[in-house]
Every structure is written in C-alpha cells, then in structure tokens.
Length: 311
Image (tube, rainbow, N blue to C red; front, side, top):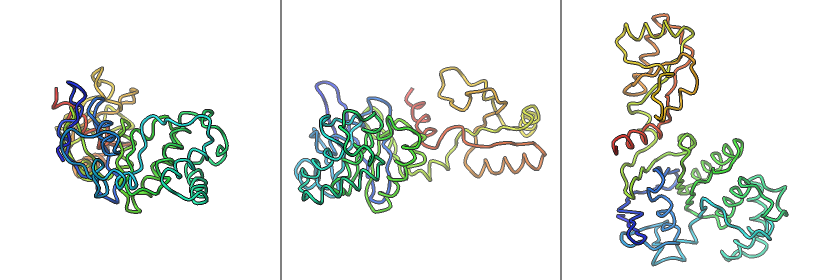
C-alpha cells in the first residue's frame, strides 16, 4: 500500500497500491520507466521500499524476509546463471538453497525440466542454452520450492511461439492451483489470453485496476471486413455509423490492424453487445461480412486510452 522507492533524485515508484489475488493471474502493465521492475524487486525482497507497506502471502518482505522468500518464486527479465553448471545442477543448487533434501531436489529438478521441455538439455552446461531456453530454465528455477506467489518480469521474452503457448498453459494451471501469479510484460496480446486482472501503472503510480472481463465490455475499436468493401462502406454511411478505412490509419499511431490494405474498416463501439447488434444488422441488410474482431486486445485498448489521457 502506498509503496515508494527513489534512486537519488529519481522517484521510480511513487505510491503504487494494488492487490493480486490468489488463484488469479494479474498483469502489471505500463510503459518503460513506469516502475514495474522496481516494484517486483521490492516484492521479491531484493529492494527495500522508502515508504509504504508490502505483503507477499501475508508476509512483509522487509521484516519477515525468510518467510516471504520461502513463499515467493522470482523470475527476473534477464536470467543470470552459472554458465559452468548444467541445467539440472542449476535447479538442484537452488533447491539446496531452499533447504530441499538432495534426493528431493533432484526429483524436483527432473520434474521441472520436463515441465519446461528442457529434459534433453538437462546435462548441458547453461552457457550453451539459447535466450529462450534460459528463460524456460529461469521459470523452472522460480518454481523449485513450490511457491505460493510467482513474480514474473517479462517471462515470454525470447520465447518461440510454441514456448509462449506452453507458458500460458503452465501459468493458468499454476493459478488454478490457488497460487498468486503477477506478470509484468510489454506483450499485451499475450496478457490478454493469460490474465484475469490488470494493474496499470505510469510514472510510478497506480492509474487503474480492472478485470479482463470489465475491460472487454468497454468502448473499443472494432475491425470489419467484407467481400465487397464498397458495399460495406455504403451501408455504414447509410446507417450513420462513423468509420475509417484501416489503410488510412494515421502514421505513428499504434494501429496494428492496418498492416495491409485488405479493404477493412474500423468503427468505435460502446461494448460487445453493440458489436453483436451491428453484425446482426449488417447480415440482415445483405452485407457480405467476412470477419469482425476487435482491432486491439482488451488490455491494449485500455492502455492506449490511458496513454492518450496522459498527453
């Protein structure tokens, strides 16, 4: 609550307050320099806040460091490791640091190597692992002691598409087991498919908290494409719906849906119910719709609206 942390004259975190709930994946969203990594470092017990209070699984990372760390799995954005150790040795060494018996640590290491699909590289030195493989080993390292809380900073960085899917499945499973999962990432499309809740931060402050369910019910941009773009445009004009061609997106704006001129258009709608009504009316009018989908993900839409307010 009200956490603050400065580095000299720079206030990296300036009164951030939020709750990440057990059994759910919470996305920590914000631009570079918003204070996300600093906040995660404080939650992990690696930085002491200048002010405010923190609780991780009911423990204060400052005054109850041992209790908090025993319940916390921390995965930084860059995985530092002992390059001379094998992947299995990295995990057994971490297991020993958490007071696991040698046999238990080996069993846990083998289980996690299978979980992150590194069993074929179990006895390879960590220095030969690719960036994505090191990320997967970093996630395994965070899970060695079976933590109640997971703090993940850019966990999908460097992962190939298959590994990203595996990561989403694994984190959803861990949350379903009652764990608290807090994920910081710039890949908002990934978070859309993963998170239950979101905390938006900017300039070191919490600017908004929401659930993904509420975010999807807000006003957002939708993209429509029809077999005949002229018919679609004429029908929208007749019905009084304001639209713009996707190909006419303003250069420099974060409009990822206009990557190619496929004749699609974009409209602003109040909610999903409004989108359903528009589709129903178009079909009844004989408009040959091919696809209707949000132009941006729910988190991206909220993030962009917040960024617009800051300008």
